[in-house]
Length: 181
Image (cartoon, rainbow, N blue to C red):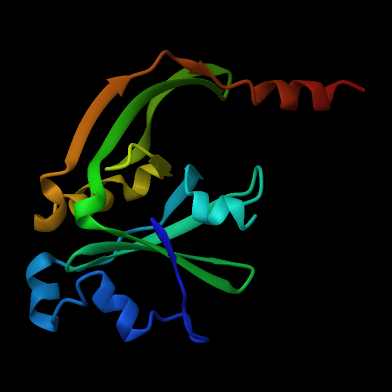
């Protein structure tokens, strides 16, 4: 993955776009059902940004992705500074998405309840055996799965589902403790 220089308006130069195979035509974009992803959260592994200290510890960094004919471009905006990194599709070995179904126990109106929440964790594996980790919000999971199920990416996409042990919600303790004087 390499850093891509953007112009003042946050766009890639035409030369950079053609480095990654160039953009799709309008009709190809419609056939693919779009070429952009939902917002995903960067976790770790993108050396281009970590070395430049663009990604700070404990800071949530949101990315969107754009599919080009032979590449995947990751865009993000941090404090009005637009950044991008690109990966050629032939350098991408595999995209793993693990969906965890996590039962969450909580107290609601004095009654113990349980609900299932989902967490999606992505891992991009490159040909040089480096990997980049992302996570995706539950409400964006279906659209993110459809993004990676598009023709240029479907052969490299693996989807797994796993169940995690129950997590307890102790938020009710805050209410109890705030009542104590």
